[in-house]
Amino acid sequence: MLETYLTDRDADASLRIRTAAVLLFARQGYAATSVRDLARAVNMTNAGIYHHVSSKEALLADLMREAHRGLIDSTVRVLAGVSGPAERLGLLISSLTAIHALNPMITRVMDGELRSLTPASSAYDEIIGLRDAYEDQWRRTLADGVAGGVFRVADQRLTRLALMSMCTGTSEWYRHDGDSSLDQVCAEFVAIGLAAVRAPVPMITRPDLSLLPIYPWEPPDVLPLSAPYRS
Amino acid sequence: MLETYLTDRDADASLRIRTAAVLLFARQGYAATSVRDLARAVNMTNAGIYHHVSSKEALLADLMREAHRGLIDSTVRVLAGVSGPAERLGLLISSLTAIHALNPMITRVMDGELRSLTPASSAYDEIIGLRDAYEDQWRRTLADGVAGGVFRVADQRLTRLALMSMCTGTSEWYRHDGDSSLDQVCAEFVAIGLAAVRAPVPMITRPDLSLLPIYPWEPPDVLPLSAPYRS
DNA sequence: ATGGCCACCTACCGAACGTTCGGTTGCGCA
DNA sequence: TGCGCAACCGAACGTTCGGTAGGTGGCCAT
Image (cartoon, rainbow over all chains, first blue to last red; front, side):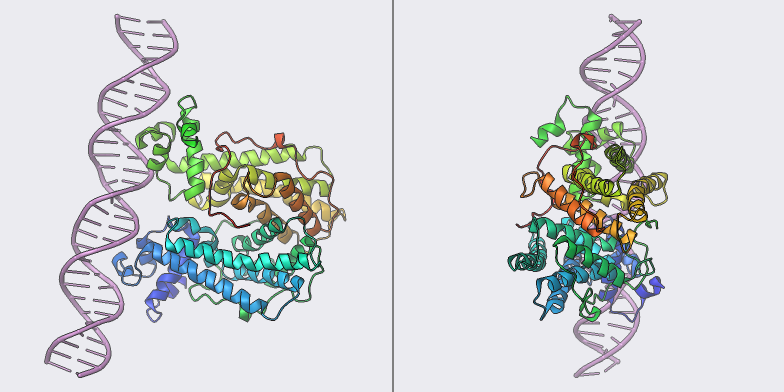
């Protein structure tokens, strides 16, 4: 079923390559994935890949750029019109969690393969800039909440790093068919996050899913990415 | 300084190789590190490495096994004689955080390179077993606290995964010379964790550091592992 | 019908990969 | 003085790597 998805002749070849790349980079890592692995997954030769992609690293950079753009754009959409720091923090937590739960492959690549880009290259610098731009949303929200007396926090940076790790970790263990629904996860994580800043939990604990990014290459559904977690 | 450390003739060659391997695997990843990289780091030829190591993968498996053993043993030491679930959870959080802060290299390898071991190999299965054995400490502590009415938790599994991600994420951003001291980080994370289970924060928010594992190959001090985080 | 172009192929390049083999060196010990 | 062994080295093994050059087949517009 996945096979037919990846080799479907009707789908645009570029998209099929990107889909396979996300899958393989997430499973094995960028360095452990060869262009020939990629070619085999889409029923091509390695030379054929280079008709669609200028280099292996450019492919990774493209994926990471689009992943970050989707994250940033959807965050802007989700936060639009929401002004209360507690509501904004709740949405930051729940949207980051939901994106990682729903797109485990591309988020693993996004979060974990920065080191595979040539340091100080323009692509590397660009991704760093995008990451910083996203984190600024968290920085501003926490600062606003503290300034307004809504949050009580010992160290804003520590709080942000702790909560972001909690959210991004979701891609490592969440399963569509697992024990917890997405709504449960979001509600639980928002509760933890708001308790961390000593603020009351807002009414809405999950963004409108239609505002989240749609990554066309994220393969559908259940795929074993890592060793299963017990219970 | 690092150079002389890695090439110090007085240090045992096996240890020097492991030290360099931890550094390189943490920086670049296992797949992106060649045996020749390793050899260059310890001033040997690639052939010389194989006098001390049976294969590249066996080297990784050894490092991961010893890392997990150290984690498990130190956790047993830290928890010895502590019976209250809140105290135990606080120590689980603070010790896992401290280990990741003080040993960022080996913990990155431990947490992130499981996929580089051949699936279903004996080494792979062994590491999975060690990981499960460690996580059982968390499972039992959370279950005890809920059973005893000390913790109030919506979903024990979600809580555990959230808090463990928070702790392990520390190795990605903590710096010895950074803005936050280890004591601050531990205190903050324990506060977040105990708030997540609606329990009062225990007195002790950090284990005796002498009970934590001593990894002989963890290179000393500040080494830039990833792109710096702002503010 | 035919010329052009897109999408891919076969075939190959130089380099690097993990690993092995057969020395050689130098130190400890009888 | 001589032997053995740990600790390497130089060179090479076969394989795979990312990437390239040039060709081929089919479809589309003229």
